[in-house]
Length: 131
Image (cartoon, rainbow, N blue to C red; front, side, top):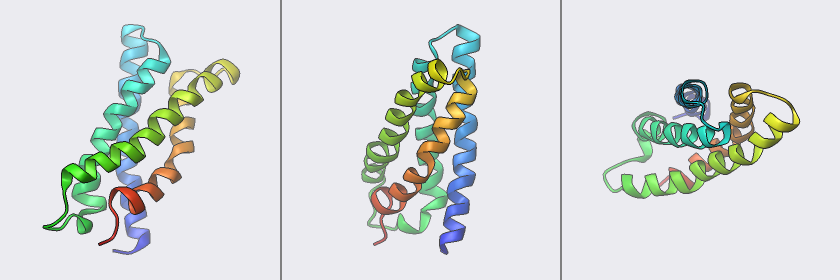
């Protein structure tokens, strides 16, 4: 698969994951009155699980041959992409909400953008390495 095709697939999955994250955050903050930082942590967790399922089936499917462990890939994905997204978002949220005055949804979008390129690099090198 070409780098452009894989990057495109990564972004399609990521776009769907953004929807999962933002819907989770909106439901928790606006529907239940949850703290935006805790809601962000829940939204990131939901998006990480969603994104892994699609990445393993589509983005990096060619790297999930007969000898590849899905459990191992999941552990690597959570340990790399999940940690970057969760830690990055949770650390950025107070700055974006308190310092920049953004509400929960725009602040999440900024945090997602900040973590995105690092997650693509980690996906190809750590989570789903070439055989």
